[in-house]
Image (cartoon, rainbow, N blue to C red; front, top):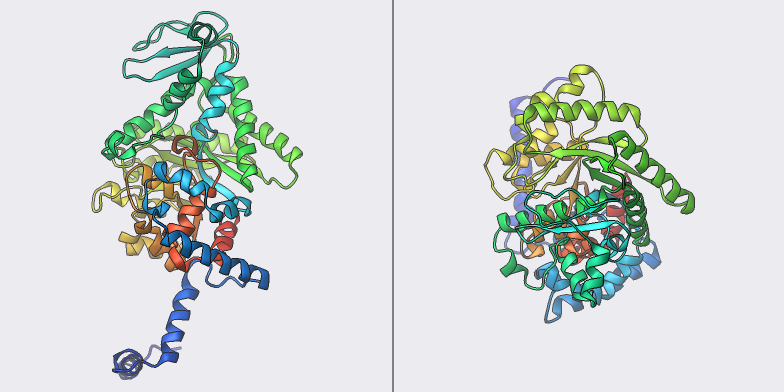
Length: 477
């Protein structure tokens, strides 16, 4: 078939212009044309093409009315900081419906912030042989040990928690202070966290505080099972956990390597699935920090290749994590990330990219580079609407964006979630999934809180039950 002639191209262009003038440019628009255009726009959005049954349509209408009531109320939760809105969300009938809704899979959660801090403090820190020390920067560290641990630089003398609580008598306030070291949650977030650097500093500190608990091998197993339980209670049937596979330790100080960790993920997941037959499983995305050297990341990629070969059922891929604005861009690691291709092996990537508002910087190039390295999904993608080429490419490649609304707000990328860039992606029907990133750090659990913010705030009045269905199906797809 030959190329069209220049004359035929001009005829086609003139025809299009005449149609446009007939539709838009006349003084009195045709109501039927208006209806058609509005239907076309509604069809394009996430969930716009989902066919609803009659009961589902009635439920969707009910949700629409409930949304109208919440928007007309004196306080609209998505316009508020989540720490101030959480109690309002918990009272919302929409939220309670979302809790009952099947939500599919949680695809962007970090293991170190999977389980609520109340369980960690009230369960784990009450176990025998748990020691605590207090750091110079007013944080805490924990360790389990059969004998008095060796002092740690920058920390007070290790104190057995059982003995310390016995001395204190009333431990309610003390336990509350421990929880505050493991989460960002606060009554006055704007004052406590005036900038991104401040909130990220505290964010990183919470991970340092919790590691001594999570790395104790018996706790690690119980923690994973508890995490799967909390997700399952929120109607989630599959999860992919991002983890650095840190070395775990026993009471006598002996340690376990990454293979032991992956084997434990596999065993715990199988045990949970055996007791919950509709649970589809848990798998792992191996992560390292993006501020490492190129040689260290190359070693990590090589390790990921080896681990994937050893544990193909549980180890699904590789990612770089940490504060994107202060870390090295993906292109800095291009040789390391090209290693699987050079070796002729497959290693899936699931890159954090676009978790930034620094448009035009070197870091802002991570979105395009993630796609060039054939990432399977993009974590956050907050900056994607500013990059039309990357946006078009991700759509064509079918690369879903993992939207984490509460994380983006708490870490100060957006204050009013009605202004979240994902609203643009939703209106265009871009492939999206909803996740919670670091639920324990933000005072959430499961996915219902993030689904609420997406459905009520980001999606506005345009989102409906079809939107919720497509988001859940996307996560499994």
